[in-house]
Structures are given as structure tokens and as C-alpha cells.
Length: 167
Length: 286
Length: 106
Image (cartoon, rainbow over all chains, first blue to last red; front, side, top):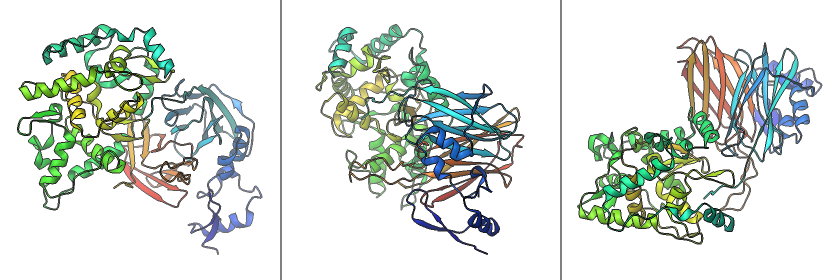
């Protein structure tokens, strides 16, 4: 059984050796690779969804992350974020999904060079996720929630004014 | 720049008047604080310790700031400052041994006029002095060495945090103190730089105004209560002198040196003008 | 001390719901920023994974990217976590650095 495999460093693409705890899962991953037997969303714990994080368009990022692009807007997703950010590099957003069995929440800034900001999957914690993020410009922030096998979304515009008497 | 100048003219920015040259500090203080009471009648006095966030029209910033304060990043720098404060010197003494009351509940008296040396002394100076007295290297090259200056800022921030909530009480009674106070006051009211602003213009006349939609100007009342502070802009805790330096560059005026006598005297004047306000340092700012 | 890596956790339980906030000192470099001294782009350096364990069982796992803020704050909520329960947070970044911090639910 393989107890070590070579993964690509997600950013530099240099080979990076890593020892994985579960050798069986490792072998399965190596054998199965991208055949889709494992949904990209729930792949091996050590895996980082590179394609989702490097996708340049919101739809592509959602597709890469969840394996599906169909979003149903839902009023049960509460976004708490400022209408005008005080500082574009420190924008705090809170997402509350008042839906049953929330599997995951992902936060996207539509107009960022790579829209996916962060993604959380839950195996016991509540359907809630909060993060401080960077925004390149005024944009909608979009929260996508996976619940009961479906994807729901909510969006809100956040205004960003660049410039400041920074010094 | 021209836009800002015209903006200022339109607002009648030259309204705030410099106090009479030989008025005593107590009278200056009364006039300074009542200026703000008149300008912002709905803002309770103690709230001025919370910066521009408390001024009318700043609600959206205040909300973000309050959420931010549930776990502000300055906690990281403050933890470093605490570690520096608590780590014994080679001679087994600690910073606490250099200060009255072990350093607790004394920061409200800083900066202070030191009769012995006939100079204003800041917390940064006393902390450095403590290192010197105990055979340890001081924090130096603060103008250029950001890492060192930030370590000192974090240590100073921790020192101030030991006096959280204490109300500013500066002694300006001796002749020497009054002279230093007058020099700081003169600096405060003097126009400088390409933009020809005085501290008073932005932080009295224009306090509460928002340049370009996202550059809110703070009221001078309460200024020093938050420092050392962490600006979102910088992402680290910094000293008040660093803020003076960057403020000078913003109006295209010559910056003085970190720790210079004029900045010490300015800090002395500014702090006295916030007499009675509670310390909130270190605090998050824009 | 300049590279002091800290992982701080705050928890607050009210009406059976625990707010968990994690603050990490981390540069979260995007790889786009130019170092003013070297004039070179600072390579990406960011937390990729942050996981949460309650009494040893994983309750949440997050993937983070470069758009997460410097000195990031990440928050989750737990229901029915008893005061005194052990909460562990682990994270790893793209350079292979990692950390683990534990606290008890309050």
C-alpha cells in the first residue's frame, strides 16, 4: 500500500511529498483520480479545491466546487455584511443558512480576480460561516449553501471605495 | 489636492479660531472640549474615546468596527507586547520593576513633564529607559526600522492596556511643562505643507466629514486615548509618532523624527486636550 | 518574535449556541503584492485548510483562498456543545506550515 504519494503544490505546481494518514483512501484517490467517483466537494480531507479557487468566473467556481451550477436564490440565507466597506482588505461577512441539514457554505466575491473566497463543510457544526475577506472592487458578495443535495444562494452588494489618506 | 482645498473653502474651514496666545491650559481645555460639545451635541463625552466611529453619519463604519471588535487583530500584536513585557531581562528583573504600581493604572498620566531632565517623556521613552537601566538593548532606529518600531508599539500598547479605562490626567502646572505645552499647541494650530493645513483644520473644522466617500476625519477630542493603535490601513499596531509622521506626509508637510521633541510636545498638548477621557488603547482605527 | 505565529480561539455560549471565532496571525499573501524594497512580487503564502474538532470529532472543515484577509478571522457556530468540551482548531498553509490550538468551550 502506498503510504506516501506526490501531490502537486496547488500554487507552484512543484511536486510536494506528503504522507497521508489513511493509506487505503490514498490508493483509492490515486486509482480513481478525476473519474468523478468522489465528488470534488467531499474529496480526501487533505485536498484543496484548486480549480474552484483559480476559476475566474463565479459560475465556473461554483461548478468546480460543487459539481453543479444550478443555484436557487433563497431568502433563508441571511447575509450580514456592510453596504459600504470601511476597508476593502478587511470586509467581515457572516452567512447564516436557516435551512435544514446544511452541508456546506461557500462565499464568493463576484468581481474578484478569483471569486471563491472560502468554503466550509459541516459535519456537526451549524449552517453558519463567517470570514474577513479582501475585495478588489465594488461587487456583489454571493453565498452558496448546499443543503439536501441542492444549492441555494443569496447575494448582497458591497461598495468599496479605493483611496484613502493612507500613509 | 485642489479638490480637497476647494471642499474646505466651501465648508468655511477657516472657522475654528486659534486660542489666545497666552491663555492658560485650563481655559484652553475648556474651550477645546466645549467646541466639540457644541459641534456634536448628541455625542456623549466619554464616547469621544472611540474615535470618528461615534460621530454623526458614521453609523455604517461603527457597525463594522463593533463587529470587528469581537475579535480584533490587534489582539495578536497585544499578545506579543505582553510577552515582551513579561519576559525577564538577563538580570531577572522585568519591565514592571521600572514603573510605579508595577505599571498598572499609570498610563493616564503619560506623556508627563520630567522636571529633572526638563523634557516631556512618553511611555516609549520610559520603556526604552527601562531597558537601558537593566543592561538591555533599546528599541532604536524607529523612523526606518518598521519591525523594531512595531515591537515597541506592541510593548507600549500592552503598557497602556494595563491602564484601560483610566481617565487622562496630565499635569501642566510647572513653568517648564507650560512651555512644552505651548510648543505643542503652536504646532497644532500652525498651517503647514503643500495643502496648508493645520491639525485643527482636519480634526476640528472638518471632524466628522468624509472625504471622497471613505476617508472619515476624526475629532481631535479623544485622539490620544486609542494609541498605540492598529489602523485597518496598516494591519499592525503602531505608535502615535508614526501616525504624526504619516499625517504630515498626507498633507505634504515635512515629517519630524519619531521621538523628536516637537512630537513629544505635540503629544503632550493633544493628550492634555483629552483630559478626563478614558483610555481605550490599544484600539482599532480606520 | 517577528514571525510569531499565533492561533487564538474565542468561544461564547448563549442559549445552547456556541460562537467560535478563530484569529490567526498569518500574512495571507495573494502573490500579487509587490515588495516595496525588492520590487519583486511576494510569493503566495496563505492558509488553505482550517478544521474544527469538538471532543476529537471533526465538526467543520474549511478551504480558504488568498482572498481571505490578512490575520484571518474565521467563525463557525455549534449547537449543544457543553461548557468544558474540548475544541481543537488545526490549519495548514500552502507552504506546508501548520498549527494546532485547543481550548475548552466556555
